Amino acid sequence: MEKVAVLMLVAVTVGLQGGTAPTSSPADVNGSDTPMMRQDISAATHEPNVGEMVLIPGGSFLMGDSFGEGWPEERPVHSVTLDPFYMGKYEVTNGRYCDFLNWANAQGLITVAEGVVCKARSRPTHHYCSTAMSNPYSQILYKGGSFSVRAKGERGMADDPVTCVSWYGAAAYCNWRSEQWGKQPCYDNQTLLPIEPLPNGVHLPTETQWEYAARGGLSGKRFPWGDVITHSQATYYSAKDYDYDRSPTRTFAPTWDDGIRPFTSPVGSFPANGYELHDMAGNVREWCNDWYLDSYYRSGPSKDPTGPSVGTARILRGGAWGESAFDARVARRNRDVPHLRYGNNGFRIAMNAE
Image (cartoon, rainbow, N blue to C red):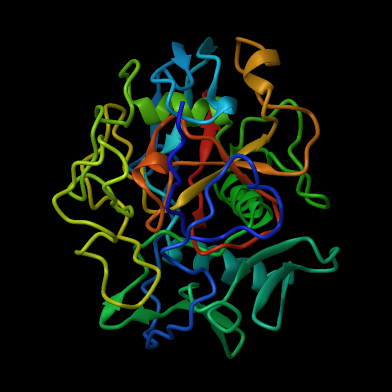
């Protein structure tokens, strides 16, 4: 099978994408755009499952690339069975992540050094996120001991997905939500590694949970809604390289391309899939709980798999605003080193059903 080079947000330099990810880069994660500043629009705290979480019914599905058009690690297609679980209806927003940072800052749980938010008294790899001071793609400001969301041009960014967040920063957010909702934390407070088996609290979705939820009850489809994609369905980088990319508009999504990167869209800007989940394709890549292993589909269990026990990179799913239709496919597997904070990486939350 001929593999067409895929347009991506960043040319990954850490060696993890080599051999399994394209290198062309329409959107540079270390760009020089500097948006204007605006006051944060804070998100209110909600109880779980009321508007924020959706119950995903348990069941079996065929996981993997049924078209034979992706990378080898997307195959073989295999049957997996999952128990019911809850999934975040939306990607976590800048506004909601600022709520977490201000709480953690008040508790003395984080520090800010050179514009990077870190776990207090932790090893250097426990970076949570970048602020606008260290990465212009971040929409989070830190000033006067407080975190807020800035504006991009004339548009408020509180409802756009958080970017420039590491896997550790996503895990720490999950523990915060667990505490808010009176649930058990799913990550060790010192190492931030997952507690096994996962307790009843908030966690990042497993890779299998993510793909099952993204498919929205459909079987063997390329995207959460069907087999073709346009800018009317997702925020991504459109190119003529793929016959399933039918968008009449090319390159970045024109509605959100204001000349100031990142070109994310507010969460929920597009119709939900069959499980009432938004943005399961495009906008930001989403961290999953699992370590990455290219051969895992050949060796993992068929019932509630949680990924390999060790690894060097964590799974990312869903494609992003600067990535192609190829990356927005529900079967696409991606990964990064967990402490990296790229401008195309975000997350959503999940929780096991009791």
